[in-house]
Image (cartoon, rainbow, N blue to C red; front, side, top):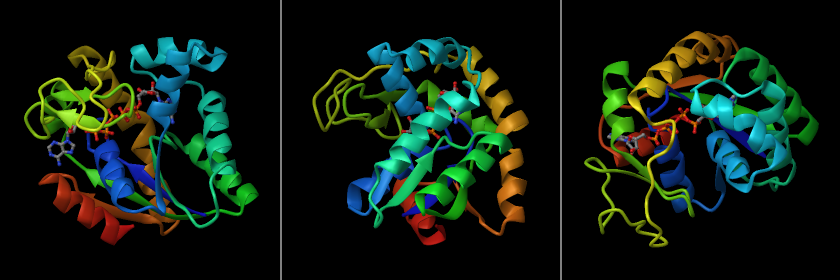
Amino acid sequence: MNIVILLGAPGSGKGTVAGALAAENQNLKHVSSGDLLRGAVAKGTDAGKEAKEYMEAGKLVPDALIAKMIADVVAETSGNTTMLLDGFPRNVAQAEILAETATNAGATIKSAVLIDVPDSLIQDRIAGRRTCPKCKAGYHVKNLPPKVEGKCDHCGEALVIRKDDNPETVKDRLAVYHAQTEPLIAYYKGKGLLKTVDGVGSIPSIAAAFLAAM
Ligand code: AP5
């Protein structure tokens, strides 16, 4: 298995790009740490109960909690898949854990692709985001509207606004990104794995640039 890491600020388009590419290519699998955690919260598992408070405050959940979820997904993923790993790692400690998880599973970290978007665009992107709680499809009220307002194109479920998508929490998530996740840019550059794509432009053009870079 190959692993491609998606790096980028909250709202930079990681889930949108990975979702679009995985929908078009059977060998690509989109794995989102945020979706795994939100699933655990919705099910009320012990991990979900522990994660909830951190997520609502825009803070990172403990490394071991999310690392275990990612290791489980890596273990159950078949060898000829390329995993688009969105939201993990989020700090250097998690990057070291991922390197060990990949080695143990016989997987290769192929690249870490940064979707580069200025902070000035982030609040607008997140304010307009709508998400399908059932199939996880993502929308934006202006930039990527559903065909029928408020309904998922794929499964018809009513779209929701994420609890952590309020302006105050977004500010905190951006601060956490700059302090804890941004150092991964230098980390993966040092390993010769970093690629960068401009995250400003149309979604199809960014997805194509990402595919070419990865
Ligand atoms: P997570 O779910 O990972 O959130 P995030 O990193 O903050 O990323 P987002 O999902 O907000 O953004 P995205 O880049 O996927 O943007 P999207 O494609 O939706 O994490 C949530 C929380 O879980 C964290 O705060 C933390 O508590 C916890 N957590 C998760 N992973 C963790 C970890 N590893 N360790 C510890 N804690 C962890 O796009 C945003 C919007 O913009 C959409 O509406 C979209 O339609 C629109 N859009 C996308 N691209 C474009 C474009 N090119 N032009 C115009 N609009 C666009």
